[in-house]
Length: 102
Image (cartoon, rainbow, N blue to C red; front, side, top):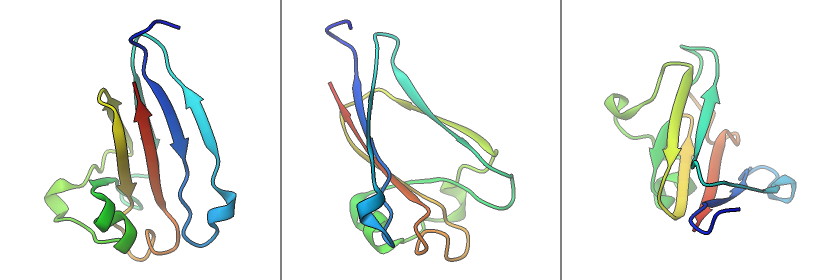
């Protein structure tokens, strides 16, 4: 692996069952991106901060990714948090935390 490769530790954060979270380590010199595939109109994706993630606080609708094939480039180290803002989806565990390491 190249020295400048990003290593991603992906943890699926499930509030209802945190013991089910898993770590995945991936990365190479070309970088990485997350792809969220879902049925358009039934879900969305918000990038949020940690307090919003913990509280399932949904940002304004204008900040939602809604294509059903949303791509997020992971180019900087640090924790990243994502939630679904539809109904009670986040409160029911539809949220995702990752840690990008350099």
